[in-house]
Length: 310
Image (cartoon, rainbow, N blue to C red):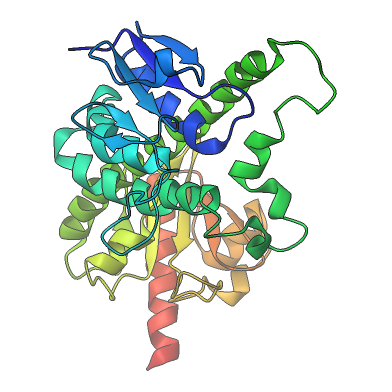
C-alpha cells in the first residue's frame, strides 16, 4: 500500500535523510513529507514510511532508523545510515521508475551503492571524515555542502529548517539523478562500443557513431590491438588516442609528431589528407572535416605507430 506520509526528523538535517527523501518522493509523489520527532509520527503505521528517526529498523513495518543500539550493518560490517537502508529496500524500484532498463538495474544499484550511498553512510556515522579529502576540499564534499545549507544558529524563524530542507532537497535530487543518469549512460555506451569492437575485428581503429566513454569497454573486451578511435562531433570528426591506464595521459599510440599543433592547410600538407583540420600539440586528438578524412588520418597514424614499434 503506498504511504500517505514520508516521516523523518525535524530540526537540522544531514545528507542521509535528504537523499532518502529524494528516493522516496520519486516513488511516492503523492505522499506528504512530515518532519517531526513526535511519537505520534515516529510510531510505525500502515500509512507511513519512517526514516532516520524512531529508534527501530524494521523493513516490514517500514521504519528505517540507524541510531539505536544494534543498528544495522552491511555484510562487510560497515554501518548503514538511513540512506543506505532506503537504497537497499527501494533503490531498485527507484531505478525502474527513473527509466533504467531492467537489465541494467542490478549493476547500477550496486555501483551507486558503492560509489555514492556508502560514502554518505560512512560520513553520517562518523566512520569516515571529510577531512580525508584534504583541508581545502573537506568542506566541499557533498555531505558538507548539503549541511552548509542549514540555517545559522541565530535564525529564530520556526519554519527556517523546513524551508532550508526543501531547498537542499532540490539540490540533492539533482546530484542523485545526475549520478544515476551517468551510470545508465555508461552502460548504454558499453553496448555501442562492444558492437563497434566486433565490427572493427582485427583492425586498429575503432569507429563509433558518436562521442562516448569507450576506454572502460575497450579494456573489458581485451581489445589491446586498438590504437585510435574515430567518431563524429558536431560538424567535424575526431581522431582520439586511447590511454594506456586510468591514471596519467600516456597513450597506446600518439598521433604523428609532424602533425603536432598544426591546423587547416598546414596540417593537410603535413598529413597528405584533404580535410585534415587540427591536431593538438599533445598529439592525443585530431579533427577532420569528414569521416573519410578522419579515417585516412587514423590509418596514417596507425602505420607510423606500428613502424616505430618494429
